[in-house]
Length: 272
Image (cartoon, rainbow, N blue to C red):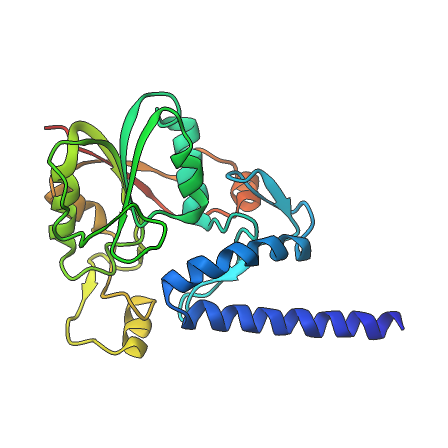
């Protein structure tokens, strides 16, 4: 009886994983955002344990969920409670340990706000917090990043993560982010980055979702940034500081938080 029940449970769990992976890669982002709320009530029950830890929700699990496209699928990376990925947990640790984000009065613009951060940041008394996106149902404003309908030199802090690989003209969008940032302000603009490439890879002739996934790691990406990504940000007018996980966390912490050891968090500052 025990073996039969165990086999049934494993079969059901594998079926759920297949369904999860299918929905993750097939559904549009606004619908995924809506579906994630009931999903995160169930998923933590399946992953009780203490092998990995999310520093954002401060919960521990036996493992994290898998995430990513067929080309760039990763195991054990998505927190089942607050849906953080490696990049979110790294950004959070930087904000908590190295920045004034939780102490100073700041005007913040958050492009494509991540669910794991949205409610937390919105409830922070020290922040004047504005969110923007083209389609996201949780954004305050909807606009095209190529032309931000806001005044220049307004924001102390700007977040724009995993957006610049989607837009037609990444440099124009970076310049717009620079324009609305105050002198002395700073931002975090994470992107998928291929450290095996010296230069960013773009090819406008690649238009089908299947080919884009093959070349740029995801069906709706139009470029794959290389090691020259910080040079793009400098060209847009930012000064860059690099925050590297291996310089701030032990290998045990990197493994427990499920960070990317080789990921670089670029802190973009507007000096003038």
